[in-house]
Length: 358
Image 1 (cartoon, rainbow, N blue to C red):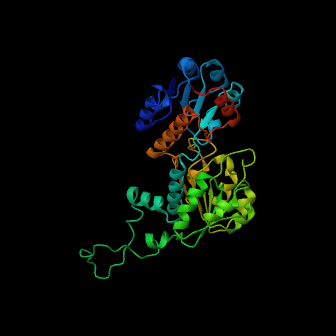
Image 2 (cartoon, one colour):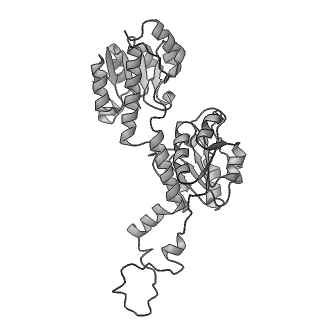
Image 3 (cartoon, rainbow, N blue to C red):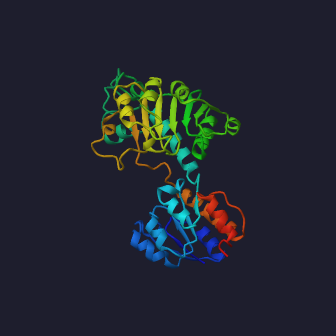
């Protein structure tokens, strides 16, 4: 059996795959940082049994032209972002995926953004490192001799201590929109800091979430009650634009808005409007309607935002996680065992009845 891997991949898991009987070839984004185009993918897939991809686009044309292809493994939370699942289903090709591969990474980053916006960390870092704004304060000094003073920031009204007093997280309420893998990992971390957790998720298992001390509420209640609102849902036809102008209007004036999920969940025009009018305390954002964030974006002109370039899921360990998940599943398929991380389970069921990878 031959596997062609274009995803970023852990070497230890590559060794497991080889020892399981796969002849492995690598190329594309995971090796060069450049995605293979459609023609290149079709050429590479001609004698491939398993395609393991991450960012390459596996279109209907690629799938139709790849007659030997038995399994596609898309190493993403949402495989439809890279793979035409309908075309794979039509051709009888199971599509494996790796839900939750970056849940820990995104949860930790979200917590970092919450603290960053609540305590003005990026702003004060920038001012202290790149400007004289925080060091050019007119210090009061009755003696005129400060040579023996080793640490005494000014307490004057314009000094950092006065200008950048922030908010503690302990005792505050976090409202999480979307209580899946990522939402639950966020909940674990903020609860450990003494925060109260509520969530909106129409598909949530309330009993399971209760075990994590997460109270499920409706969206209006979440919008009105939360001190921090965190987007953690995946984009579907139902969730697109779920956080609208109505929800922003319901937020506390002291509340913060965090988005490390997807821009399509949010009305960004409404967000910019409430931020510009200081109707909420601030926002920390990792995703945008247009990426990279345009130079003329209104978000770049606001003082009550923290901006990052879609980095929440970017850790070395994510590669370890998704590599292990897919190798575990491929080995299970080889051993005729059931796997659950598959986008079209009915196709996998028939595939296994027809002999699987043997």
